[in-house]
Length: 191
Image (tube, rainbow, N blue to C red; front, side, top):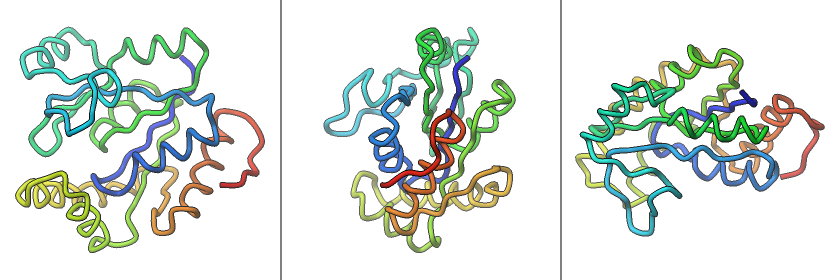
């Protein structure tokens, strides 16, 4: 399998933004599209942001072993389809996964040479502000995400690389350097 890069960390820490900027600098890095049981947010398209599945379909695929990893997060299920990674590997394309900590642990077991990077917030209060500021979730969902985030933040020591997303430019520079070294190519970069 081509090099697999896993970006993980709590909800609201900026994983999506960092991955977008990472891929601008490393365009050879493909993006794995995860599956989820959560409904699409405004503007999201099936097969682009996520593969949106209902619970019975997700459960069937999990039972059949179609996922490299899958987890429940904040009351919804998420997973990486094995076929998604196999397609990228067949093309010789390194791929980045944006997944939660539970899933990252499963990928570590399934793909031992995967690069796992934990994205951390500068503080718990900053994370709360980001989740509330997004305006995409109801207050009770934000609180549930913050509860899960507390557990996930305790897991960051499990990861070889931790990038603190305080100043976006610094976080991007650090992430690009780590990933560039892992997938090959010069390490020096400009954000």
